[in-house]
Amino acid sequence: MDLQAFKQRILPVQGRLFRLASMFLRNREEAEDAMQDVLLRLWTNRQQLDAYHSVEALAVQMTKNLCLDRLKSPARQKMTDDSSLQTVQAETVSPYRQTELADSAVLIKRLMNELPEQQKFILHLRDVEEYSFEEIEQLTGLSVNNIRVILSRARQRLRDSYLKANDYEAGH
Image (cartoon, rainbow, N blue to C red; front, side, top):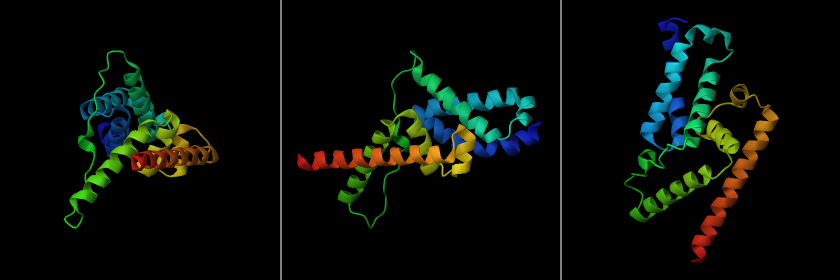
């Protein structure tokens, strides 16, 4: 694979790789470092990339594995970066409602991070990155039916946790 082919096939997925790394690492600088490591590894092994059915699937899998390795690393410092959290800035929404929406977004993000890794990964790919079931099947090696079950359980768990957290907060 030459430089032109690399640019055409790999660079368009940089945004997805960064968002995936951000989801796992929850720190902008670490996510950027992880993405750069993956791109460097892909470039270093570019001669073997033609053997893969989907280079994007390989890049996503490499990013996931690298992030999980970094999370397990004892040298990793616990840092979070919520600067990527988007706040509502519409003039038509009251400040009270803006705060309420921002609190809900923070809660959903926290609850997503509490999901088991596989559920969090599948939910992110489907609902955040908007991959099709077939693309997720290629990325994970799981069957479409298995993906649907995992996704359903993740959404149900997220829904239940969200309602429980809101009931708890409303009760106090």
